[in-house]
Image (cartoon, rainbow, N blue to C red; front, side):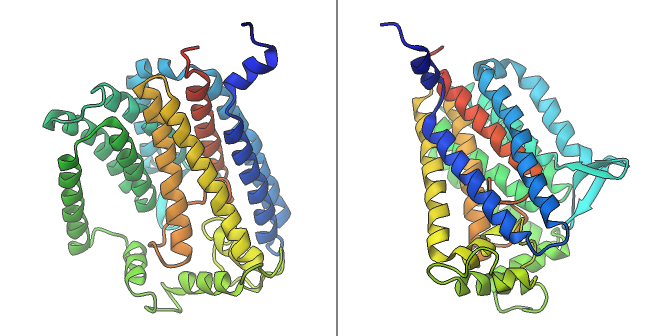
Length: 371
C-alpha cells in the first residue's frame, strides 16, 4: 500500500522525541529568563541562549539527514577530529581558562566554544564503531583492551585541561555503550577495580587541582567550610528547600535575585527552578527528562543494527549522567562539577551538542527499516 506524504514524513520523525525536546527548550528558556532577569546584561544572555538553540538546529538537521551507517567508514577521520578538538585548548594562544580548567578556545580575544562538547558526539560515534566491530561479544582481553584504549585516550586528553566533570561524562557514555555492546560482567568488575585504584592514586598523590579536591571534601562533609568551598552547596540547598511545593514564583526567588546562588543560569539552574517553581516545577522537569530518556531507549531498541543501537545508547548515557550529576550536586547527592543540565542551562556549546545528539537519534530512527 502506498503511503501518503504525511505518513512518509512521520516514518522519518520520532514525534515524542521532538515534543520532549521542544518542551525542554521552552521550559529552559523560561527559567533562564527568570535567572538572568536581575543580572547585568540579562536580556543579552537570554538572546544568546535562544540563539544557541536556533544554531543547534543546523547540526540537528545535518545529522538527521545523514545516513548514520556511513559514519563507520569515517572512523579514522573522526578519531583525528576528536583528538584535535580535545587538544586545542592546550595550544598556545587559543586556550581560555574558565572555572579552573583550560577547556575553551578563543581567537582574537573572543571566546568561541568548548571543544569537549562536540567531541562528545564524535566519541559516541567512534566508540560505537569500535564496539560494533566485535558484534556484541566483548568477551576477550583483546576486545576489552581495544575499547579501553579508545576510552582512556579520550578521557586522558580531557584530564589534561583538566576537566574532571567532562571526563566523567565520557566514562559514563562508554559504560552504557559497553552494556549494550555485550561486555561480560567480569570485565566490568575488573574495570571497576581499576577505577578504584586510579581514584586512590589520584587522591594519594594530589593529582587533582585544589578546587577539585575541595569539592570532593565538601561532598564527603557538607558542613566543611560553609563560607568557602561549601558555599555553593549550602546556598543551593537553601534555595531549593525554600521553594516548597509550588515555589515563590518566576522572578521572585530571593536566593537567586540577591545573588546568593552562584552560576545560577548555568551550573545551578536547577536551584533557581526549585526555588521559584517548587517541588511541582522540579518534578515536571524530571518527568520530561524521564520521557526523553525512555524515548532514546526506544530508539536504541528499534535500531536495525548494533551500530545504531550503540549510538542511541551513547546519547542516552550522556544525558542520563549529566542529569543525575547536575541535579544531584545541587542537593548534595553528587560532587559539584561544571556539568550543565541538558537543554536547560545557559551555554551555546552544550546546547548545540545536545541538539546534534537529537539529530543522531533521528538518523537512527528514520533508518530503522533500512531506508
